Image: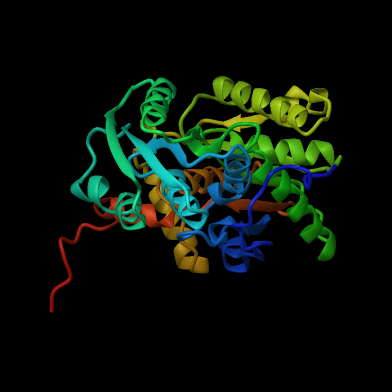
Length: 340
C-alpha cells in the first residue's frame, strides 16, 4: 500500500514517541500500558489533527485553494491546528465555532484554544449557536468567499473525511514499524473517538496491512451504534480512496464504547477529572478535558473492571489538546487565585 502518490505536505514531527508507562501500570496493577504521543506532533502545541492536515492542506494546495474553511466547537483543537497549518503554507483561514457548551465559564469562551486561534490570526472567527447545520454554514461561507474572488477549500469538522483519515492510515503504518523495532506485540489500541477520522484511518491502515491489532474508540459524543456506523462508513470510504476494497474492513472490527460521554460533548465528568490527574501525577503527561481525558477515563475504568488481563499490552493513543485545560480551570481548581 502506497501513500506517496497522494497530495501531502510536511507538518508532523514523526515518528511521535511510543512510551511505556511504568508508574501508571503499577498504580493500576496491570496490564502493561504504553502511550503513543500524538500530542507531540509539533504544530501549534500539537495534536492528532496535524496528521490529517498533512493530506488536507496538500489537497487544498493541489486544487489551487487560497482560503481554507473549517468548523468546530468553541474549544476546538482541530480549528487551532487548521489555522496554524494554513499559516505555514500561505493560505487564509476562516472558522466557524459552534457553541455546543452553553454554560461554560468565562475561561471556556475566552481562553485555551480560542485564545490561540486569535494569536494565530485567523482571517475570521464566527461564533454560531449550538445545533447549527455546520455543513450548510460552511457551504454558505464558501459561496461568500467565492464572490470576493477567493478559491475556498472546505475542511470538515475534525478533518474527518477520506482525505483527512489518510493521516491515521499513515500513523498505523508508523506505529506498526515502531512495534516491530522494539519487538512489542500489543493486542489493544485505545483512543478517544469523536468526528471518526482517527479511528477510521487507524482501522483502514491496520486492515490494509493485515495487522493483528484491535482498536477501541472511547466515544466523546455519539452513542455506540451511531458512532460505530459513522466510523465504519468512513473506514470503507478511506480504503476506497486508497484504491483498495472496502470489504477489507469487517464490521465487527469497528468497536466504540460510549459509556464515558457523561452529560454530553465537552461537559466535564468526575472520571475525566480523575483520569487527567492520574496520568499527570504518575507520568507527568497532560491530557485534555474533552477528548483524551474522557478516552483515558474509559481505559482506566475498563482496566479496573478486568476488561484487560495483567498480561495484556495496551497502547493509549494521546490525541493532544492539553491547551484546552485552560478553558476548564474551575473544573480542576477551586482556587480563585494563588496569593502570597
